[in-house]
Length: 249
Ligand code: PGA
Image 1 (tube, helix red, strand yellow):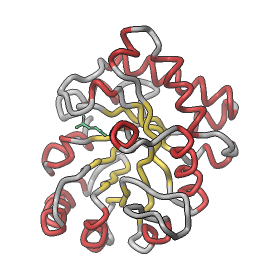
Image 2 (cartoon, rainbow, N blue to C red):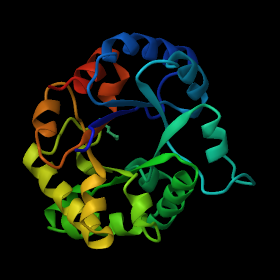
Image 3 (spheres, protein in one colour):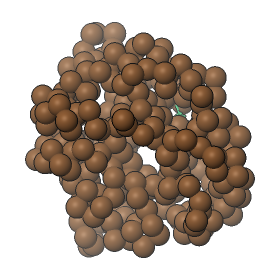
Image 4 (cartoon, helix red, strand yellow):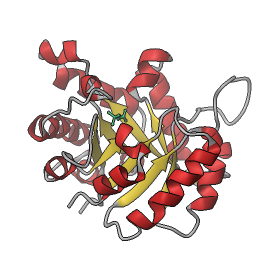
């Protein structure tokens, strides 16, 4: 049985004060959640949010992680820095990172490995563009992203990763993949995992859907056999909406 995991990706939103206020509003709303609840605020908000969630069922995630321990990497953040704040998850390879900041499968792979080596669970994002979907290239492309991200990772480590399937055309557009469409591609992802790591690991890995997931569509997406959670952007910025996604049942 895979435990569902709903994570909020706040992206570049919320100052430290706003972040604290949001998470304080969220704490009582999700206290009785059955799934694992994660929030991924901007780096400067990790400190106030980590203090606010102490002793609650909310887990902390970061929006990125660098592969080096330290050094001349302006604008980046290391696993050691994240661990100081109790960060347990790190989003890697989000399509916005790939599109605007030149992230590739190779850098995603290095970031994922650094996370795993430091006991941080990478949430590895994959997903096709609208053009790729229309050309019928989705399955092949997404499978290649999964293979690239997990290159050189052992089956034991692979079991711990979370994969987020986020079709680029559904992110922030209000256009969600239908539950069936998401399930279909997520099944391809699980098949890809099976071919690399074997059945056991493939059945253990949690795979989220992401892209305009909200209180209205969460239940139908989560009803799918292979969808184990969600990576939530816009709807995670309002405590009430996010709590409704968390309590999708
Ligand atoms: P969205 O973002 O929910 O606003 O579409 C999801 C994401 O980019 O992780």
